[in-house]
Length: 327
Image (cartoon, rainbow, N blue to C red; front, side, top):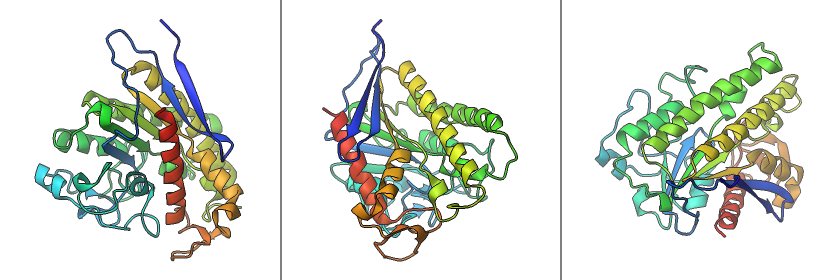
């Protein structure tokens, strides 16, 4: 059997690898479809506040649809749910909206990409490993359970036209900072997280949500206003590096085991560092403080979330790499 082929696509402007496609040689029974971003009609998203969009059927400032107390929904409620414009964790739209062009209204009315966003603000991977932020919160495991139970048979997801984005771990790496653990113990914990995460990914796959999977790693949030220069920042930095290493290993293993799926990885950690290191080139004059306002000088909207302009730049970077991966 031919060895797996790993293709790394470098961003010419940034000078670093920002996305990689792990393209495994298909098994005789598998059909490997080449990814094409222009022909991708359905974009699904799972994650936390960096990814969520507000819906008219969602919990205010937390979700597109439902919450822990309103977990179920009808097909009609899902299909008539509307994205509330400029209502995310930034001062406006977020990267999923810029990437898809789906900023408001019913996702089914968006073109060329429909955005079906099941991310929940404040989500960790698994409440069995880390407590929920609120009693109404939904973790990523249950985001997938919710989709599989109530949405999988409602919204189409043909493999040749489907992209599934997974961005989780931002809260997990921060929520563990108060734990008195050694680096080895943290690494063991991230392995537990990966097992939960990829069981959820597997459940999505088993319910025929296939096509192309796009995994994001965790940005360098030790550089956020809430942690920059603090005594805990070095631990936070190491947590993120270790989480990202575990994610990369498990992503590669998933790609190897699922040869009918195109698996892409976006290096959000490297991208955030690059933008922060060259902030003035992108119009930012303040990368250490924050402003809950419409001031384009600021990188950070609040203590832990970037501004709309950061999301816009991020979406442009992801779009460029998706197009490169389509060639």
